[in-house]
Length: 281
Image 1 (cartoon, one colour):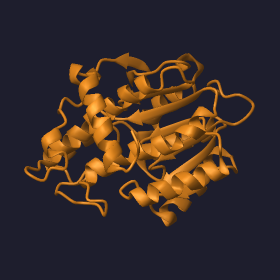
Image 2: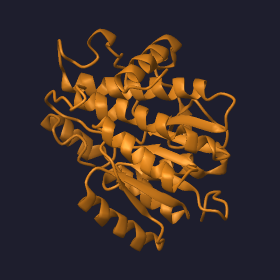
Image 3: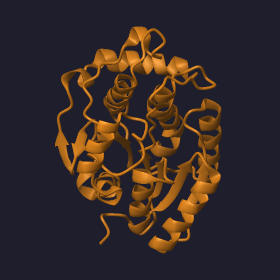
Image 4: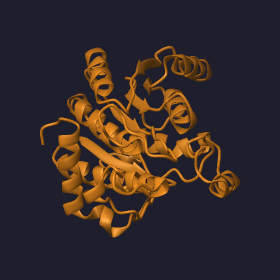
């Protein structure tokens, strides 16, 4: 049963679409009749996932775009490529994420988790905004978690002190700050921005985390396909039309911790990230 797509296929971008939650979300959107644009880092794995989605959904319009969220040059290139072929974008699902147990730095000089989990989606979303604004309406959905770790603006890249779990948690808070600030900045447009917590699901995201954590996650995790159902609904279902600046789980709005709604850190993070990614404010 389709959830509100018009006769003209929605153009839906999904990041990290070759595995886990991203793959399941891309498959779910394709099954709803969307034209899915998969944004993947690895061409071989991306092509295999594209073929799987096309085969299982029966759609021939699943497209693969290669882009690395750890590289600002790659993000700029793939965003340009997408808008050249699809000037209108209806849905952007920011689902790609990474966890690393040790501090790693990208070619742009950013800590890897900060780069992939926050700065990358920030830059990609910003570059695709013109395409999203051409849709009426468009939706931005960012996958995150109910983190309570505040962003350390004095040590944003973990250079002075680094804790992998704390750094990862801070990127999830950054996703919330970004979503709520983006929704404020998009007021008066037809583009909405919401965050979603998919709950625990089976993936290899936390494969470098401590053994006990991996055991607990595995014990209580649901299949990625089930977690993806909520993302697909939030992306295309008519009941979410016009909803913005909210945080969802299981199709219902939930409350993030108060810090995430505070406009001061939201604005500050936006301005700092804009500088770090070379965007004008």
